Image (cartoon, rainbow, N blue to C red; front, side, top):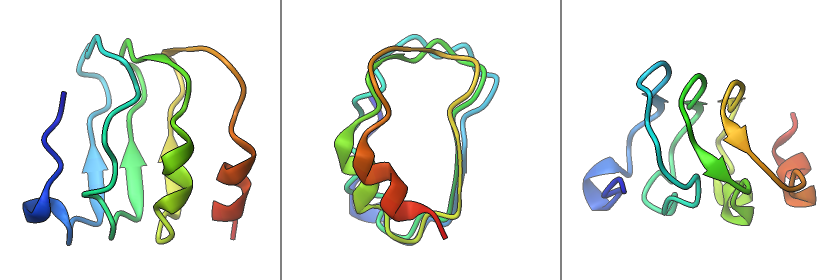
Length: 82
């Protein structure tokens, strides 16, 4: 898992696309409070999109395509639409 702690709080763009990451998508996103662009495409993330993604209020771009995600898209994610 990724250690998103205090040192990541000012990060605005995070791109992990095309890295063949095999892990549950339920990573702790709380340390990414300032994130605007999150690119997680083309990996092997699995599981459901975490509900806490709606807490990323500065999010402008989110790419989760080409993974192995299951479940429904959380309703709270619509609060991120601008």
